Image 1 (cartoon, rainbow, N blue to C red):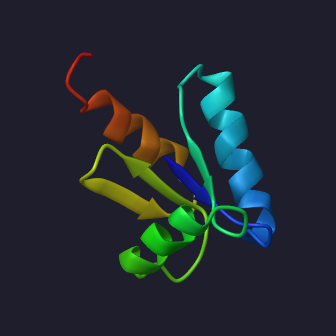
Image 2 (cartoon, one colour):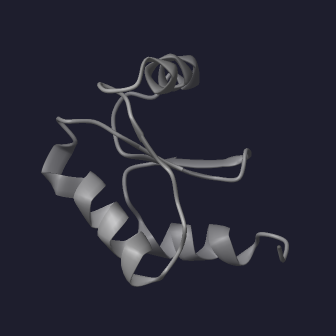
Length: 79
């Protein structure tokens, strides 16, 4: 899941989504200004900004780091 916002700094949200598309990795964008449920879940996370990239339920990072994301995805069990 990619938690994004209209004011995502330095186009990091766009870069994160472009990377996911380029790598053919399915994801769900959670647009916090457009979806009240997303905003509520984002607030519960206590994150100081966007993007927040979540892999499964236990791996979360603030910002976009393709190295971290590739490692987190590689650690997922086969589906």
